[in-house]
Image (cartoon, rainbow, N blue to C red; front, side):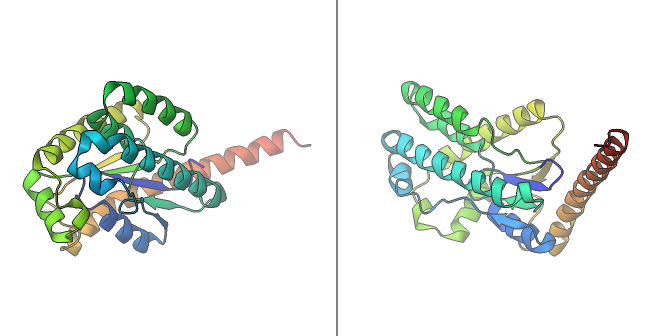
Length: 229
């Protein structure tokens, strides 16, 4: 499964994860995996009162993302079909650590580790980030009613949390390339040249995956020749 391109895109709310995932999916003809967001019945209440609704909100996201990844693994990755996703399930711990009280975080973390123990891991990660002003501007542009009460201070802290998370991800997964995109300098929605720059970076890593796949096929063929049944 590691030989099949599985691209995950991460970054703070409003940074453009889904927009980039759609563009890459169209360009490469990869299956698009979109996270369920607005369908979360607790999300609006969460933005109004984070402390009161954080556990329900995070549990909904965790269970739905677990089911999505379980289906993606069986229906696509294990069948050799590439996937590009606009999230990675490990983001759940970013939000949980920021919003849950200690007693509920302890319960949540146990459930999280049980569910994600054997989940597929992307072999290419794209990390989008930008200044608070850019993030707020993009959120305003997309105009989701459910996001109108998000506090700038929450977004600012979340952006910092993501930076810590991505640094830790690179330390824990040195074999998984992380493509970092500065949203203050690149606007892949508006400018085609910016999108093509990102695609060229992704191309390089997809080629590396293809090379590893060919090496694996050669090794398997040699093994069969040396150990005939």
